[in-house]
Image (cartoon, rainbow, N blue to C red; front, side, top):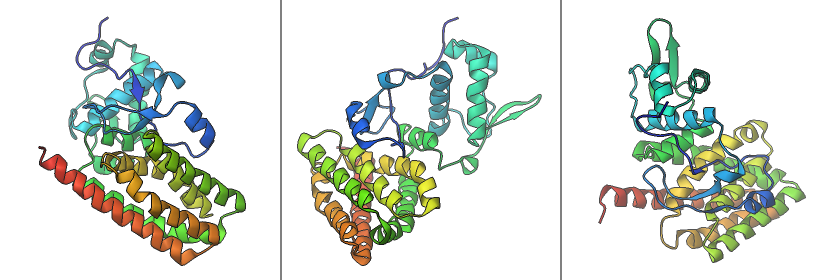
Length: 286
C-alpha cells in the first residue's frame, strides 16, 4: 500500500533535554542549529540518526502534531484504522499502538461502535513533553500559551533558585558553572545555545532539592525549551542574557538565596519582554 495524505515526519526531531543525560554526552551527540520550517519554531536538535524512530513513533509523532495543529479538531472522529493504514502505509498494529499512546496522553478516546474521538485540549496532559513539542512545532505557541508559560516560570523558578542557593551540593554548583560556560561557548560559536540554556535551568531545578520539582524536570525542560527556541531568534538575545545567567550562577555558588531569587526573576522578566516582542513581529510581519 502507498501512503495518502500528509506523510509521517522523517528527517529530524526536536527533543526535550532528558533529566538523566550527561551534559558532555548531550553536546557530543551533535547538537546543531536547525533551519526554519513550517513544522517547527527554530532551535537546536539532535540529529535523528542518533535514535531512529520506530514505525509506531513516526505515526505517533505525526498524529500528535495533527491534533495540536487542529488538523483533527475536538469532537471529530478520527479516520478509521483502515484509512490511517492507507495514509501511513503501516499495519493496523502500528496504528493501534500509536492511538493507544495518544489516548494515554488524554488526546483521544476510543469508543466502541463510535470510533476514536478527538478530545478537547483541556483534557490533554499538558506536561507531557511530546505534547509540549507538538504544540510548539504546530505553531501552537500563541499569546495564551506564552502567558501561561511565563506564569509557570514565575511560580516555580524564583523559589527553585532560592532553594538551590541554600541546598546545592558542591557537585551541583560545579555543574551549574559548567552549564554557564557551555552557554558562553554557544554564544561565541553561534551554535548549541538553546540546549546549553535548557541544561543551565535544568541544573537549577535539580539543585533545589525538592523531589516534586525534580520529578517535573523533564516536562519543565521541554516547556523551557519551547520558550528559549522562540526567544533565541532575537538578534543578540542570547548574548544579552548571559550576564543575567551569570548573576544567577554566582548567587547559587555563594549561597545568596535572595540574590538568586532576584536573578531568576530578572531572567523571567527579560524572557517575557523578548517573547512579547517576538509575538508582535509574528502578528505584523514585514
